[in-house]
Length: 399
Image (cartoon, rainbow, N blue to C red):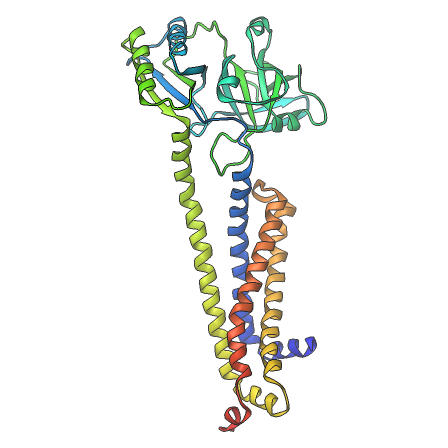
């Protein structure tokens, strides 16, 4: 039976080649769209690694052409921390979660290296304010003032890259690229390891991260400060106004803006959903186009093969047999097209293309295969039923 099907397909190789090409390219596009959607879906269900709910960020800026002395800034933060409804407060770098601000560097430990690590300046209350969970070691504390190297805390994925199979506590990390003058790169000592974190958005994956201790007695005069504030549940505009008034009460030359991290998350989500929706529309449009194309081609083939169908029915073939023949031909063509597509798709996990997990590519292959086979089976079902209903006398009356 299978040999006979291949012979029928070969005899109509010109028209079948177009159908085969359509199936192949449809599989490739569905594979690409599926890989992206599966990757976004896997990222979405990953733990975030911190608790952003009930956390606000304060953007405190000095007046035009002025800077804020650290002692004055510390006094402002002490007064804000004392407000009713403020549970915790932390000073850090401006690349707070969900913002469109990134600070990345490459780091090395011994012969191990890692690129594109998110780095954050953070004080001794940062972990408590943002709800970071420590797997090993501890967070910064006042006794670290005497440290000869700047203390850091790293995420689990950084530890796995720089210290595979061993503890990272007490180990030294350095910048991967030293200064251009050839001096020794700055070194850091690891105090703790946190869970992996996803600070960039709901559909972004884990981001290797490093938190560097912000010196509490730093004399640098800042132009602006990024502050994270954990507030009590139910806090709203009233507390925001109190915070703004408190900062203005110390120095009226400073301006303050208050934003909820949840608002930042939603804003980032809206930007991410636009291309995601476009991908979904492209996938849906492709499926509809392929379905219409397959249905039209099969309908045309049946009309062109009415004589063949009439002869088979006259020789004793049943309507069910004719129906299964057309359906089987379509499934064989689909298998050939999908096999060619799988051969191409298999190169992506083998070459580690685009840095995606091989399981994402395997899932996309399975998804594209199932969709293509289901689509062709549905499109072939109705035309094959029409072929089964053709009577010999009707098919052969013009012969």
